[in-house]
Image (cartoon, rainbow, N blue to C red; front, side, top):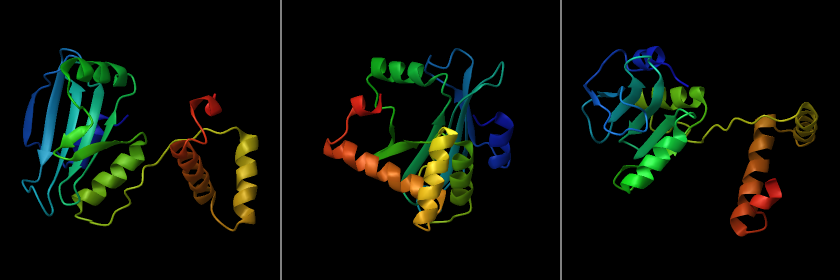
Length: 181
């Protein structure tokens, strides 16, 4: 998970707002900081971090791209269930960033940094695909490398193709949860 130091460097230590975090899912010491460039439309962006004021645990980071109407976040895996449970109890759609814009949840720190830096730099056509961490056995990885080589594509392209096929088969009903157990 991203650290306080990394987030502060990302926003150039520019804080525009802060307050106690009103939900209990992250504990009684949760605090919320924002860094907003003051623009709500073209060129507008903001960054948010929710952290513990006592031990500096980072619970959640967000970046809001008002130009492209996109919002990304990372939630500390140790607290995802608590956050979802409290959102349900409060009857709040915690996935909604703002009107008709849902958060895209990220799992890879570098993915968050790449998107954040692109948004901050005003890039409109940055890569909005989501990086997915995959841990495969060596034998399977080697087999996929051979398949990619035979097709003259990169391993990443091969993995992306396979994932798209699995997603399509899942969406069409050909595969379901039992197929992955």
